[in-house]
Every structure is written in C-alpha cells, then in structure tokens.
Image 1 (spheres, rainbow, N blue to C red):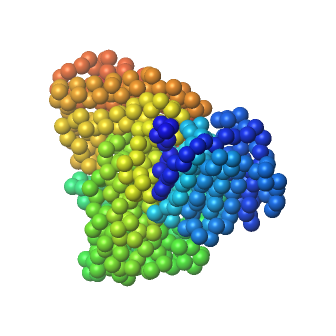
Image 2 (image 1 turned 90 degrees about the vertical axis):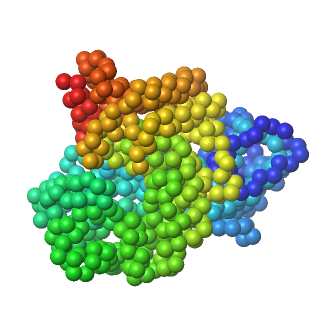
Length: 606
C-alpha cells in the first residue's frame, strides 16, 4: 500500500481499492451538469494539475454525449442521493467520477482529486460531506494591515482549496467611504471597485464574501475626528472588564440619533458592492457604554437593555435593506434573559479564543433561545508574534465539537491583528488549516496530521519541515513561566501590558525559549519550499525568530543583562526588515502605526 496520503480536510470516508489508475496522455474532462460554466474555473485548475503531476493533456467538454472511450474524468451534477455540498469521488482503473448534488459539492470533489494527484495512483472511493454548511474565515484588515489585492487573491485561492466557503474582512475604518475620507485618509483602504473584484473572485470559488463593518464599539478611528466626536459615548477615561482603564473615545453612544444615521450611511454605501445578503455589524466589546453619556439610562433600564435596544435599531436598518444581520454575541450572552428577545432571523456570533472557552455553556444558551448562531474561534496568531499552536488547535476543536453539539449553523475562524498586527500572514496558516479541517468534519479530522498538511498545502513543502518549523515556533510561548490569556508572554515583554506593567524574564525561561526558537528554525533551514513566495516565507519567519529572541533579551535587560547599544542596533535592524516584509504582502497604510509600537521598545535602550 502507498504511504499515507494527506488531504485537507480529510474526507468523511475513504476506501482504498485493489489496483491502480493509469492516466492517459490525452482525454476529456466531461462536465455533465446543468451549469457547466460555474465549474469551468475548477475544471481548468484540474487540467493544470494533471499536466503538472502526470504530464497529461485533457480537454474540457460539456456536451451531453461525448465519446465514452475518450472520457477520463466525469463531473456529474446533480446526484440527488448525496448530501448538500457533499460529493462522491471514485477512481477506478480507467475512469474517474466525481458526483455531487450541486455545483459546490462538485467543486469540493475536484479539489480533493487535485490534492490526491501526485500522491498516489491507487484506486479509491471517497464519500464526503461537511458538518457545517458555513465554514468561514474572518481576516482583520483594520489593525493595522490592509493586504494587497494579490495577497487576498492568493489567500482566497488557498482557502477555497480547503473547502472554506465564507470570507469576511473585518473593517473599522478601511473601506473607502466616499463621504468619510478623513477616516481612512492614511489607511490604504479597500476601494469599492476592489470589493466588487474580490466578490467576483470569491464567487468563482464558491466563497461568499460577507460585508463586515463595526457599527457600535471599536469606532475610535472615526470618533477621534472632529466631525464624528460628538457621537462618542465618552472621551474620558473609563474602566474595562480586564481590570485596567482606557481613554475614550471607543464606542458610539447608543442614545445619539447621529450614531444610527452614520450606520445608515455605511449600509447604503457598503452593501451594494457585495452579492451576499449577510451583514456582520460587529457590536462587540462596547466596554465604555454606561460610563459616559448613557450612564443614567443604563442605571435606569440596565446596560443590557440599552445595548439590545440599539442593536435592534441596527437590525431594522439591515432588514430594511433585505439583509440578514450577524453580530458578535459577547455582550448579549452576559444578559441571558435578553437573548430570547433577539430576532430569530439574526445570527449571533459566539466568539472566544482560549482552548477552554465555554462554547458548550454559551452554545447551550443560544440554542435554548432558538437564535441561530455561529461558533467563532481563532488562529491564536495575534499578540503572539509567532503564534500559539497548542492553544489554537484546542480552541478550534472545542468550537467545532460544541458547535455541533448545540446546533450552530456556522463556523467562523477569526484572525485578528490587535496591537500592531506583528505576526506575518504565514503564522496564521496552522490555525487556518486546522479550522478548515475541523469545520468540515470533526470526526475524520480530529487527529489530523497538522504538521504534514500545513507543510504540503500551505507552505508547498512535501518534506514536512516547514510545518514542523511553524508548529515549533508557535509553541515557544509554552516555554515561559506564564501564559497570559489571548496572548503570549514574549509579546507583552515587548509591549507594556494593558495595566501598564513591564514584564521581565528569568534566565531559565529565556534560555528555554531561545533554544526552542533555534530548534524550530533548523527545520526551515532544511525545508524545500516550492511556492512563488518561498523566499518571502523564509524571510518572514526569520524576522519572527529574531523578534522572539529579542523579546527574550529585552526581558533579561530589565534584570541588568545585555548591552543597551547592541540591543538598540539589533532592534533597528529588525524594524528595517519588518517594514520590508510588511510591504511584501500589505499596503503601506497602517504600517507606521505598527512600527511605532516596535520603536517604543528602543526607548528602554536610550
């Protein structure tokens, strides 16, 4: 039997049969379906893969009765006995059949076949279908990175090959609203035309591009401008749930009619650029509400009631535009008596990013109310520099299992950029890949070969070394004496913690971390990456490793170790390369905001 083949995600069932399939030099790919045009992109991708792996030429046809002897691959739609988005892939001695109920399932079957090519010629039969009908990814494009269109296209291509079917781009101030130019003037935002282009690109790959615009909290990028300042809940210092204080502005005031007028303007300009009829309005972490202009009203009626009333006003605006509202559920879940008042055609997004987040408990609350909800874990890449591998895998699997338990209607894997977005995109690949696998089928992917799959299907490295390196760097955080929530200790060594504390390191933990970094990078040194961005990935991870090691030295510096001049020189070099890496995948806007956080590290050396 051939060595174990790697598939991402692993199908629900796969049966190896006796014998092999022999590819001919020239044959037909027959699109036996009512809408062959919708599968042309996938068929051409298969055509290219056959040429690369077997030097085969294949012609794509769609007419009903091609010469049977010339047909090497048949894509048959509909096969009504199969599940929604499911497919059956049969590789026999002289023919390959992909049968599906609808075109999306056929697309997934084609992508599975492409992953098989080059790994084995064994005859086999796969029967596959997803646990979650919606398997999404949300990418933060507001704090602080706005990817280039090329980066987005390449990421979408990769996610589509893993059967992801929804994408959201988290937006605070990075859509180019024509009447609100001052908000995005220095942010290199996504333009209306670019959204139209992304939407079309996604549709061809059976991905729904969902508009995502925060409309309540996280509005500081708007409210700091004079034109919008009067809509803020407060411009004063307020307490947070995390035991520290923040300086406003942060949230829109829910009692200000101007807040709702702004939301109306956002809806009217943003939504027409998407074919999706969903709209994620955010509304998470409204932590200052009740500490400013709405203080008396919250005292009188309760902060949960004030929050819900404003949320329902947004709901009516979204509904009036024939869209379904999605919203982050962190505020409303703290007021379980109000959950039942939510509209049954809105979707709550239950998010949490620790491995032991209470998806079970919170999912039960939403399920009992009859409100549809998604589970929303994350890649654990943010506030970490190099990732948090074990936490990411635990968090993603927890969400997938408990979402299924309580009837979640979707799975949205989030990738944030808090406090400077220091991690380069490849740091998120492990979390993105595992999320795609777990949301497709928990049972068949629970014990997935994460290292092998990420190495092959994200890093284009069949040896497994790149996956091993990324996995190891992502677990450096475990070498420290403490693991702060939703972050890594080395990250906070370089940035003051929210409460203002400065962290130092003990010699033993710093040495453990630096040894682990060196061990992981040895795998990159022998990793035969083959993709177009192979050199870029190696350079990005070089910056990651140097930044992690500098954090170790910086932590020891507070205990009197290290030379200030040498550390300052080292950080200047890191910053220079950091900016180069930033511009390789992202737009310039936001870069200096991120870099200024690195520059503050140098203040200790002056």
